[in-house]
Image (cartoon, rainbow, N blue to C red; front, side):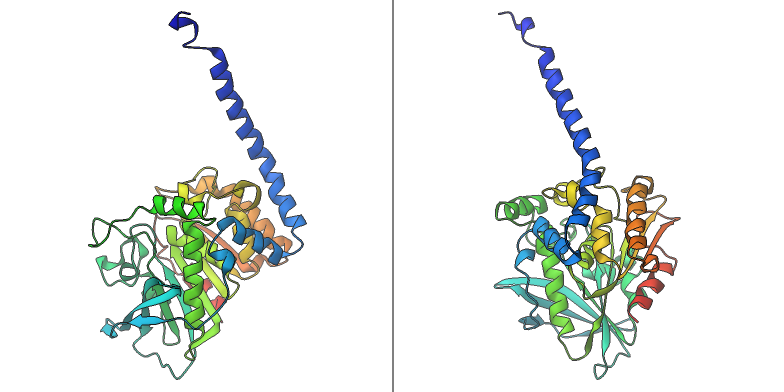
Length: 339
């Protein structure tokens, strides 16, 4: 047979076309499947268990326990705040790092609200706390939510800038793939880690476990949305510059088994409701186009209205880029949600 007789077989093109048609059909069907999943779940807690299963180990093994081994360094006074480096043993032999920020006038004899402040890609607890780089696009996240009765903890996730920080190299996607081989994901692991941080701090006598909030930008916006969906102790959440259409934006560590049939961003957000949820995105965000999020915005609004709690949700498209909005709308909504 001559090469020309098998090199450009039309059957290969038809196979590719068949795959495209299949994915298009599955995408259309997924919209109805998500509605059916909500209807058939038999309650939000059953749906939350399905969400845990989607993200996988170790989230599926989570049990609240405030008895966590910690290692700390001496507190440092800095620009009206007291900062302390913490390491928490969230799993046996597994140490998570983060920064605790307390207002200089806070009183541990009184109960403080706890706010988790989550950095994004290439970020760190130091950057969100304005200790370095003047906080970059976080726009002084920690300083804007801390108060005399509000303590902030900023965990370090596997997202720091390897070109800036010395130490070991890492490959986030490779870690994610390894975890998936064991029934988990990097997202499941890091949501679990944040929940274990809440376990520890909410168990301290100077923290009010009934007043827990979370705020995050970019990847931090993802973890804010995903952790608030998982942990009902979070009474108010502000997710900045993340919420969008996951069929459009699907980095490897943002994709999960059967996700499109169960939990796109709007459905994850529905697990936060009727607790307070604020979602924002900039008109000039170069990573996420707000126009591609509009259908998910509408679904999320519909979920809030179906629960009779439209007041529990705020969605804002603000004039700005990939940054925490400099206006105070979202911060005020978050703090009011903590009571």
